[in-house]
Image (tube, rainbow, N blue to C red; front, top):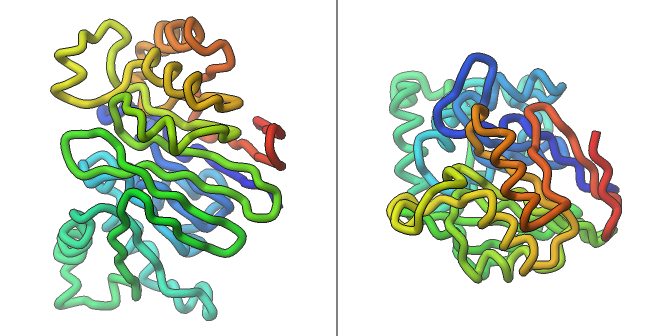
Amino acid sequence: MALDIIFVGVSGASLGSGEETACYVVNGNILIDTGWNAAVSMQSHDVAPTDIDHVFITHCHQDHTLGLPGLFFANRNRAQARPNAPVLQLYGTRDLPAIRDAACAMLQAERDPQCVPEHEVHRVYPGDLLELPELKVDVGRAFHPLDARCYRFTDTATGGSIAFSGDSAYHEGLVSLAKGCDVLIHEAAASPESEVGGLQRYLHSRPQDAARVANEAGTISLALVHYQQSARPEVLRRAKEGYPNARLAEKGQRLQILGPGQVVWQ
């Protein structure tokens, strides 16, 4: 089995027409962040919302969780669409139960409980190791103004691995989590011209910071996400200055990791 990743969205928090903020589907049934409207956006890539069994939230800022009510609502007929579907599992920070409750309130679940599928919420912490079918998931801390996580997925059969930074400024813990991984998916929301003071305030990464993490972690390839579309050429240029094998991930793009060092971009 190969690790299969679909970039449902790659944009920053402010979206233009046809864009989706950074969120991803792994192996067809794992969603990382819910974007603005992941339940609709994923359908352009032949993934149905009812296919999703696991949702990993990196942090509970709005642009990463706005899509949760929509994902719930799109799964209201989950049992009919997939009679043997497992209970939907949500993983994330200590804020996740409150976000789940808000999503349920928006859907008026107390009055219309059928609008929310059966689900379970799990708080996960740095250092946790989760086991999913054919995958292990390492949980790390992201360095952001609120409680935040980064994740590493490893295929237990092939050994291929991918790390997701979430929203984070540079820090050594992220380097450790991504050590030797095949692909690092790293945010680049901060302007390449940002000064240290601005980075400390918002705790995002510039493309050159993402390149630094990739170099220090010894990753095979680096894909930048959560960047402003208007800054694409400069974002890529600054990343490549520090890490020549950097690339901008594109909405709808797909990659497969067949094993260590075997990365296929489609």
